Image (cartoon, rainbow, N blue to C red):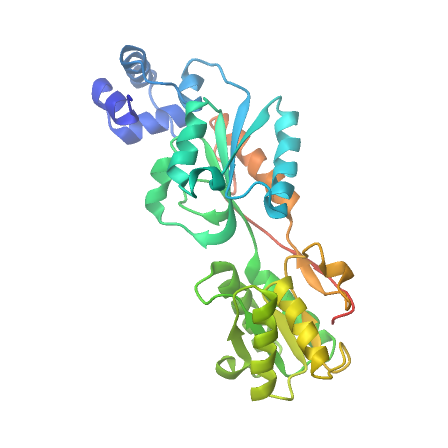
Length: 329
């Protein structure tokens, strides 16, 4: 298969120049564009959306990649992206990481071969991705829930602010000895939620000994129950716990009741993500709703700007979650 490197060699320019000419990211002289267009025609380079832009035509198709498109997280982002796509007379072509064994390179290549105008890649788990991955996205692209490189616009939830608001909420309810059941230690979302929580307590003048008041779970209800046991066994005077997701909050609530604690009068608990069960748990869970549909709308709006040859401003968007107060706090 003819690659962008072959086009660059035939046109006598660098790969980055070809990429910029195709994406419209930077101004390229008409003479250079003509060389690149001729090379594309001579080599039979299969045109991706940006290459077609040189011929002033588009397909009206947007590629959407999610690691699991059946999961509610992805479904709500898709709903927002579809709204903007329809407004721009386009539709979405979906592919799932499940289909490709979570091989992002293969999934993106699948979409590129379908001549999509651009790609939205929604990561199910917020993570930092090695910058070298940007080479995969040689068509106009936007990432959701992760950041790859400054050259690729991104939309992410502001997990730091979510953690900060969780602490401020619990303090406003009278909590003074607060603890955290965090997610896995290397998970970006978990680390940022904990950092925001810690920062807010510092701002409130509350001493927080992370060595004794933070335990790490695996986002399961069982780890929430184990985490609550560990925290209360070490510090029985804890009066509030922030859990990094609703599953752990649910497990912590159940275990607290088994230990005879009254919620929220003796122990306040806050979760995260506003999962489907949170509102009708035996003790409804105070939590944070991620702006998923807004993330979809914003990512699609940014992508259409890239397809039009514009650089979104800002190119890195952080959206705040919304606190939903329920009985658990």
